[in-house]
Each structure stands twice: as structure tokens, then as C-alpha cells.
Length: 318
Image (cartoon, rainbow, N blue to C red; front, side):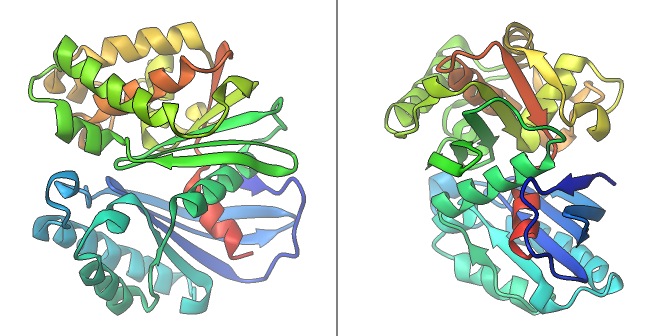
């Protein structure tokens, strides 16, 4: 497993830690320990549970989505126990879907029963700050500043502009891959009108986000949509996190890849060897978010990082 560096090593606490990131589409676990100013990752797991299924329409977490999430958390709880991580060194962070759901308390209770910790339902600002920390400490070099970190999730997207002094401006917007796909896409592949509708929602969100995207010198994409995009540009024979992490791509190639994948049917996407089947239907909307963000920046390269909010949660335990 990769070691995640600390650009300014904090006082690091001994012993293992466990971080859980529960988003709209994906539930992730990291177990690691700190040493020599770095996070040494022992376990990194991901499950596509689609917790946010239908939340944009109903305002509630669906029973079947809760069942999928709880099954994954049962697996994670066993791994946490096996690695001897106590509840006091475990942090479970829930993001967009839980923020938006009227029955979020049901999920909170289920997590507490399984892991012995109460989930932190992150605000958009907290999510953005942790994502920035995770992305920056995960890179093996110091990128040119200002750096724009782009985190496209299932329910929300975070844009975070920062530098050596930390976050300068950040916003969390309710435009994620699952939310936008469920809201607008009725055809396979999406029609030109559906693409325009998604782009319109993203542009409206970016217009009001308050983050000066045009100041970015470097753009770093994190989380599943962006890492899958990195694998697609590389045209990998299978998903390879080591090949994806830290990869740098010409924006022209990124745009061409987005256009190609958005134009595919779900069946065609399922045949892509690097794409997780749980993303095949909603990756279209997520990629369009990336495209609209890049269109507002002056950069000609796009960097992809495997380190993301999950690492940021782990570093918060340091």
C-alpha cells in the first residue's frame, strides 16, 4: 500500500486508525497507521452501495439502499476488529445522501450498532476541507499553486481552491453523478437534450459557488468519477490504482474521453475493463461535471489522485 506523506508533519499518534467515508454511491474504508510523517495504509476497501438511491426524488434513504450499506458496514466492522482499531480511533463520516435524507437517523443508529461510533454527518465545508487535505498529502510532489481539488461524488461535488497555507475558497454543490443522472437521464445513451440539461444544472451551481476557478494553476481530480476517467484516458486493461494515482493528462485528451464515454450505452460501458459496474449507468453525469469545471479553468493538464476524502478523514485522527 502507498504511504501518504505529510507536507508539514503533525504530531502523530501511535497505533492503528480506521476511516470510513460514506457517500451517495460508494462506501469506503481505510485502516492505517502513522509514522515518519506519513500515513501507511494497510487496508483500503470500497463497496458500491448506492445509499443515495432516489434521495433526490423522495428525500429519504430507501430500505434496499440501507440494507446494502449495512451489509458493507458489517464487513468493515470485522476488518476494524481484526486490525485492533478501537472505537476511539475510528471515524465514520457521512456526506451528501445522509445530509439530505429525512430518515438519516435510521442510518446513524445502524452504524452505531455495528461499529460502536456515531457517524459525523459532514457539512459541505467540512467535506471540502478534508478532501483537500487528503488529496494534497497523497501526492508525491508539491503541485504548482493555486491548486483546485475537484471531488465529484454521487450526490454532491466539491471544488476547493488552496495552496501551501491551506484552503482559500471551497464550495459543496448538489450536483453529483447519481443525483444528476436520476434527475435528467431517461435514454441510453443520454440524448443531446439530457446532456444539455445536466450541463445547465452544473453551470448554475458553478455560477453561484463563489470559488474563483479561473485562478487555478493545477487541477487535481479525486474520487471514483475522476479516477475512472484517469483509467479511461490511459485505456488500462484493468483498473490499476498505482497507474492512475498521480497520473497527468492533457485536457484535450480528457475532453475527448468524456465525449466518448458519455456517448456509450450502459452495456458498452460495462465492457470497459477499468470501470466498476456500479458506475456504468451514472458515470455520464459525473464526467459532464468534470468537463464543465475544466471549461472554467485555464489549465491544459488534469492530475488524478487516488488519495481523497478518505485519507483526509484518516489524517484528522492524527
